[in-house]
Amino acid sequence: MRIVFVHPNYHSGGAEIAGNWPPAWVAYLTGSLRAAGFDDIHFIDAMTNHIDSDTLRARLAELEPDVVGTTAITPSIYMAEEVLQIAREVAPQAVTVLGGIHATFMYRQVLSEAPWIDVIVRGEGEEIVVNLMQAIAQGRWPADRRKIRGLAFAEGTEIVATQAASTVKNLDGIKPDWSILEWDKYIYVPLNRRVAIPNMARGCPFTCSFCSQWKFWRDYRVRDPIKVVDEIEDLVENHGVGFFILADEEPTINRRKFVEFCEELIRRDLPARVQWGINTRVTDIMRDRELLALYRKAGLVHVSLGTEAAAQLKLDQFNKETTVAENKEAIRLLREADIFVEAQFIVGLDNETPETLEETYRMAWDWQPDLANWAMYTPWPFTPLFQELRDQVEVFDYSKYNFVTPILKPAAMTRGELLDGVMKNYRRFYMQKALFHYPWRGTGYRRRYLLGCLKAFLKAGVGRTFYDLGKAGYWGPQSRDKVDFQFDMTRTIADAQMADWQASADVKARADERRAALRAQGKDRAAERAALKACGGGTQQLEAPRQFRMPNGATVSPQTVE
Image (cartoon, rainbow, N blue to C red):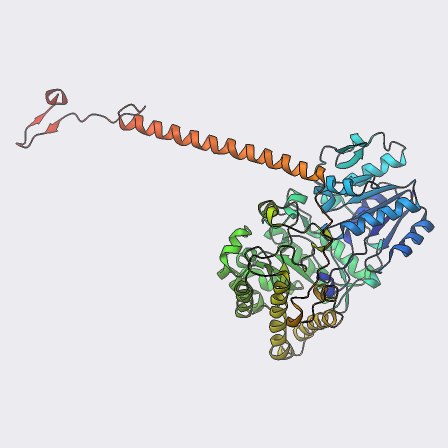
């Protein structure tokens, strides 16, 4: 049975300005499938190779697949749907499969708008995909599809979701097949080295209101640090990787295992051959201040911090559980440890103003991170914050849900003014860094790295790919009133998805009502008990004094007083 995976050809001018990122999902799925006996597996990286629809159509026709699978984050969903539509046209007998975070939570929407998709894999794919492919190979598809956990599909007019599959408990049992990737294509621009995105842990115990990762991975699990280093050593020795970024939401949560990971890298002398970066939380940096020197020795050179906002009000709205003062201190600690630090700010909520944008710039300059990034708030339709702000969301063109396009229109600004304010922050921050900081930060690794980052920004800026500026028609402050984000306003929420949201909202509302009623009952009962005790009706009454002392010094019993 021939399986073909395709990575959709989607570009937005966001994180990709730093390089071409290897799609790790296909390596993890392919490794699991090969372990289960499937060996006829092919991969088309349409994104990295900028493969258009006609070229993809020809490639699929040549391969004659039995299964075509792809994945999608929210902004790439339409390209993923198109991939499978082309597959349906070219290989009508092939089973079309979609996975990824968007389809996991929005399967009713996807199946409503793309009926050519045979099945959606919901959640972590390694074990579900093996079960699905075995059913197809053994001729049990589609008869047994209701028996396979973690799927969604259309059956006539009904959209069916089977019972959710459990999360992968044995992460160390997954052996990714990195050989399926074209490693000469995946280059990290600041260092001009091959880059990888391995995985150490899955899940996140925190519940930031704008994020969906904690919902997708569900429970937090960490791999054996020795196994992770084995994988990195393989990437370095057999695939020429010189830089990696841990894909984890927060790899430092389990400090003991993260320290073991760093110590093993040092023991094998890997920091001499490969450097790396992570995303993590401010609170972990504060906690690990005494360990930062060890982390740097292990090759950690770049930390992207989820500072998110310069105002405490927004931090609280995001449920970040951090303070502005902690953000500043964490950045100072990282710079002192000679670790490049990138501060991440989320802007573009409904309450954004020119003043709040200016505040993020002033705060960023005061904090002095090496890099700063202003990301547009993207209302993922499966996050708690989206449900709170849903009435304010006017745009349901998910191709623009990419962190660089202003989806929400702030009450006090137009979207063009918002984009212009963000670009103003970038211009000021990096112009001052380029003139007064980067060229003078020594002559070694630090200087080369920072100038490499600046080169990536300049390259994307000149090419008008940064923040999709070319497509939007932004050329500076004079064009802010003419910016066209090219939203497809015909895109709406499918009836089936809306009904599912409403049902979930009703369930939540009823649960909230029950909790409120129980709390009210508890308060009433507590008040009743307090009143009974005050009146002498409690279960543990105060003992009556045996005698009272009279003003003349004599004592009498209670009975005498009565």
